[in-house]
Length: 212
Image 1 (cartoon, rainbow, N blue to C red):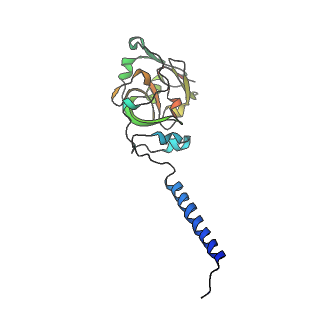
Image 2 (image 1 turned 90 degrees about the vertical axis):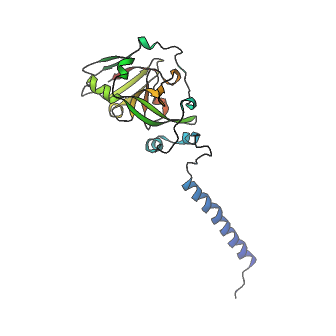
Image 3 (image 1 turned 45 degrees about the vertical axis):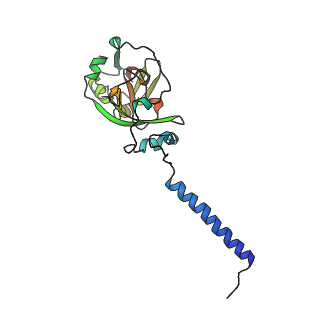
């Protein structure tokens, strides 16, 4: 039997050690690229998702965030008189709309559990109820040359979606969350919900939808 020198023993030990360290860590990286926390209600780990990951993410197995646990970054207007509230839908349309809060509630409803992510800050997975933006656009009769839809909040904040994005089933104006009337800090009377995009596009306290 051929003997093994001390130098060869050291080399063999180093090789085995490298395989143990890098092999296990690479395996862990592949299987646990998103590490689930001990507390299933803690969705903070999802704040590292990038745009493409969020768009493709399946939130159906996540717990629903209770209304008490929803996060807030901007509290907005302190007092909102819903009796004087109107939602205007205009721009490149054949039939501009001016809707009261009650009229908005009268449209066919949609309810979806949608994941909202504010990168590096928080993630909420709540159940939202409202009216599809596509329903309003259909009633307003959007002009063929229209390309974009801009949503304006009463705080001056606004964001724009392409017409195609705005007409998708995951885009709606919500007036309820987790079965309750939308709280003021979350956008009452209505806020924009956009499935698969970051929360900065979820305009709150929407008063104006302009098609251009």
